[in-house]
Structure formats: structure tokens, C-alpha cells
Image (cartoon, rainbow, N blue to C red):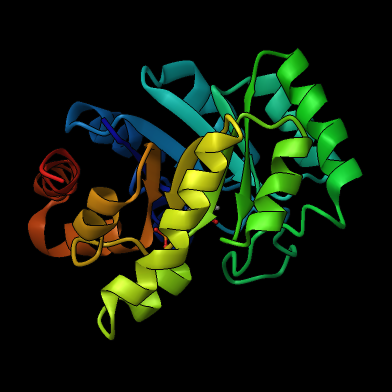
Length: 239
Ligand code: PXP
């Protein structure tokens, strides 16, 4: 069964727009769990424009499902992850001022840097996932870092889904087979939605987890959070 981790960064963005504590990020995360999410993902950025470092600490104290912290491994980020000890850390190569992640790691170029981080986090009992594109040589380089999983960057799939979904998913199927043969677990995320999730989950072998934020929170405006999470889970269950 593929797990659904809900990325709650957008909830923090909404809260930060007014400076108070509405909506309450902790409460929304607990409600996501109550409505059926298998995990919660946060992506703290250096300027704390979405999730704040203190949110991450507060969430760890209350969450009962799987906690995934994703982000660029600055010294501050690494210290936070080591303090909080989530179930999983996902390393993402995004620049501090980037709107959102828009590519995976070059694991050939940054192999040594990543390998040291993987070892450090694993020594503290934290599963490590590395955000990557579908390039097979790069996935081999990711495996060489000793990481536990890769997270496939699904934006190109989502962008091409409506034009030609068979062509859009083909490189992801190959990437998943390669990763599995290397002993890696497989996560995926970015621009997954009620439109494109089911086809992705049906066709990608060994898919451990999807992490979804933007489309899910946008859907919740119309459907409500409970119904939305149930619908995303239903797309996964019936695929
Ligand atoms: N995975 C990673 C590494 C991300 O950076 C993001 C966006 O923060 C997501 C998954 C979720 O993408 P989306 O918000 O488009 O669902």
C-alpha cells in the first residue's frame, strides 16, 4: 500500500499571512491524521516563510503518524532534523529563495556531500530519502550514497499527463524499476493531484509513499479537508 503524506506548508503560509495562529498548523496536522493521512510532511526553508523551525519541534511532540522533514541540508536544517529526529528526512536541492523545488539532485556531482549526510542521519536512526529526477545513472549515484529511498520529482509527469500520459509516465516506470533493483525504496511528489495520482500509483511499481501539498490543500477549499484526504486515499487504494 502506498502511503499518503500530507505536506502542510500551505497551511503555514495561510497562517503567516495574518501573523496570528489561524489556521492552527498543529491542529490541522492532527486533523489530517484523523482524516486518514499516513504521514505529515513539512519543508522548512531558511527564511521560515512557510513552516517555521518551532512548528517542526511542536509537530514532533504531537504527531502519531510518520513525520517527514524535507529541505535543503543547510547546517541549521541538519541541526533541526537531528534534534527532532523525524522518521524520514528528504534532502532537496532547492536554493533558499526558490519558490518551490524544481529539480532533483545531481547525485554524481554532489555524491560525496550527500553520502556524508546520509551516514549522519542514519546514525541517528533517521531514514534518508533523496529527491531525484528519472535519470538512471543519477539514480545509481543516489544509491551509492547509501540512502534508503529516492523521491521521484513528478512535476514533468504532471505537466505532460494531459497531453500523453503513457509517454509522461514511461521514464518514471523505468526509474522505479532501477531504484528497486538497487534496493532503494520509492517515494514521489510534486504536482500530484486528484487528476493524475491514480494513474501514477497504478503504474509505478514498489511505490512506498507520495507526499502531496499544493493540489490537496487547494482541493480542500471545495471538498473540505476530511473529504479531500479520503479521496486521495481512495485514489491510492483503488489503483
Ligand atoms: N516533494 C518535495 C521534495 C517538495 O519540495 C514538494 C513541494 O514542497 C512536494 C513533494 C509536494 O509538492 P506539491 O506541493 O506540488 O504537492
